[in-house]
Length: 176
Image (cartoon, rainbow, N blue to C red; front, side, top):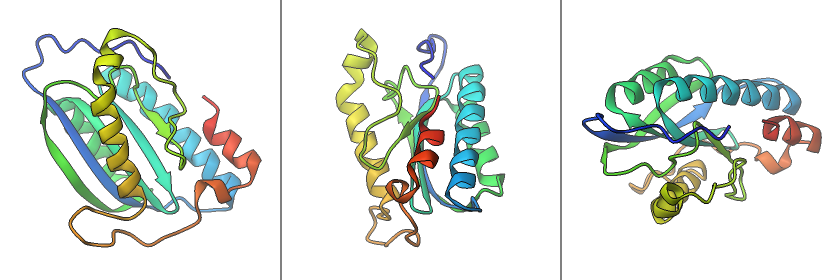
């Protein structure tokens, strides 16, 4: 869902939080794809309401996600994720203030294993200006989803990759 860029006027500080977790989604490939589609639909709706933007990647059994927005809103979303039984081993990789959003037009993009978001970047001034930062954060998500935490630790256990899902299951995930 491409959301109108949230207004950050009046926000004291924008925050970006990046985490990795182990997926606890269960069932066959289709069941996992349906669960992921539900997560994306709920996230996109709630994040838009809270003024939170970001991107989510699922590779194998690892989620990697960047959340950005007002401090309290990002904390609320992260607290929900940390308490969600569909996640375990939630590990914060980055957390801190940022001058601008890397994902100003995405309430929650899903980034496939090829690194391409399911929501194309809209060529508006804010997105064009954020492009280098957006790519840097997407690179970090790719590394985290591949199992590298950036501190020399291997990350989480490998699992089947998105491209190993049957095509029908991939289509369910990518349907917006």
